[in-house]
Length: 191
Length: 175
Image (cartoon, rainbow over the protein chains, first blue to last red):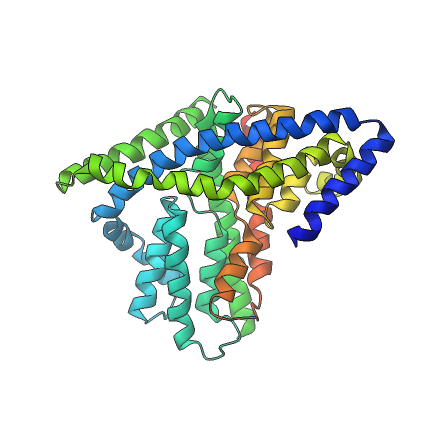
């Protein structure tokens, strides 16, 4: 899709700029954009290296197991009648990896969980209820520390780059509650 | 406002503290583990870099040419209805579709309006509280060859909209 959108954006912008007399701005803007990518990447580089290292310490301890135990009641509510132990384990691990911001670990775990769930899926062409809930949860950004946003804010010279953490928690929780409730309602209506 | 800042500011030190103490408690060589994996961050950024270049240039020319302002004006009646500032509309539209494009737009918005202004704070909160919904659904279903996703897209997009509206409302209350 980007093979069409990307050139379209550029062509339309350039033509519009010629007619509206903004072509000088556009020309300078290209180099400004490149500069912001370099700035952002440098900040991201620092943030991601730091965060990856810290989270690897967590992964090397029994921290993740402990967290898996803590979210048991939540798992029961989200995935009632999920009897497959392997799927259960993979789903909880994926959710915790998401919360800890380990995107690189979360996705492979999530795909594994999907494969395990698919083995028991009656209709192989269609998501079942567990899969639906699981995917909706993965589209909710359940991240404890929104590292990327903090890196972006730092690179743009924010006075309080991490000042958004608490509001992000509230917005995430509201979004997740809406997603889960909608899924539950859709599931009950489908029966 | 001060409490929110304090809570936000303490979150990172507290998480790091808990993890390091936990590691020490279980007698792990925490620094060795840290060094061993910290370098993986470089790979992630290297992989992301070309995409960001492409996207930032495209978003940059959309803005500097004046087309983005035109689109924003065009959709502002709808966004006003949803209580979303029209400056944020490009982000709200792109956020579910593309991760790198939404980073590009978010940076663009914050460069123009500032990171610590109402618009900048809402932009940041939206980025932190929502995901690339369409991409996530595609990855999770295509890996097992599923085509029928039933209500998943609807539920996920409802969650995104809820996240965006809450981001706006939270900062309206706080500022």
